[in-house]
Image 1: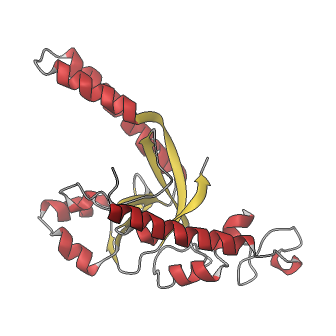
Image 2: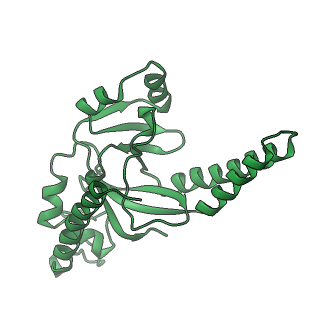
Length: 234
């Protein structure tokens, strides 16, 4: 069950999202916004990364730019804010609100993870599902007094998760990132006993460049630094 404070956070996020989306709807696309081939242009007159009209309009709104202002890292090569991707195996997802996992003890599992590559994050979670199913099958095939508990755990897992990942696109802002060379560096900090609160005092996210599984990986610590796009990304 969500607490009152969690609901207030969600309400605040949805209020900002709806304000941005409403402003976007009121933007008119003019002839000068497109080139001769009918492609939408960026602010410098080059072809925009966003030929989806809603996304193109979102980054033009005053509310979006006020929210995104100060982000130092999550940009396309032409300076437009970048859409990144988050996947989940959960069957039931109330809205698309994404929150850091407050229950985890290790700080490296705390944030909300995004990838610059949509297919990479889909593959990761769908492979994870297959690995989890095989793990349950292996445990149930072994002689053990824990079979009943393992069977219940498997039933609960299947009730909550499915093999096909749901994937969402989002704009995220990170103003004070901890930048790491690869995911191993993240694990090394965890093993070294790096204090999570010290991390949160100095940074609002982590950026891992050229991660072998996720391409560029963005880990966001605050849910109000995530603007989820209106619908699931197919």
